[in-house]
Image (tube, rainbow, N blue to C red; front, top):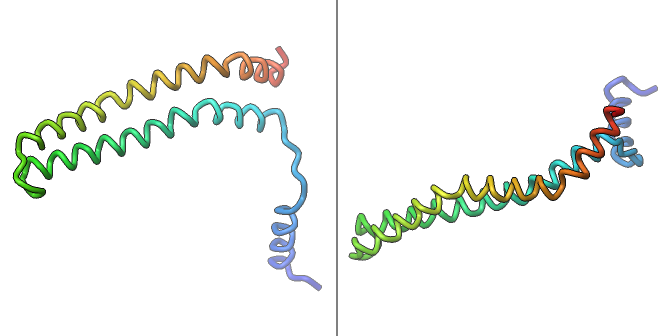
Length: 115
């Protein structure tokens, strides 16, 4: 006879192999994530790149890497500009993606709300 914790473990393993039905709400959530994902990925990558450029500029300006103070200031300002415009670029990409997926999401949500 199986103990209760063994039964739960077996059921959890079994659930991982059973075919799951995708509900309309799951599909709506998936579509929403699909709409937002490219904007988030761009914001993370561009923000990290901007922070790295800023860091290199700081290293150059503090003369940790070579004796290039003026170049370090220029590179640092470029990094600050990248980090500063990141949010606005994110918003622009997100707005365009929402516009692209708006009809599909509104239709799916109306179906779920029985409108």
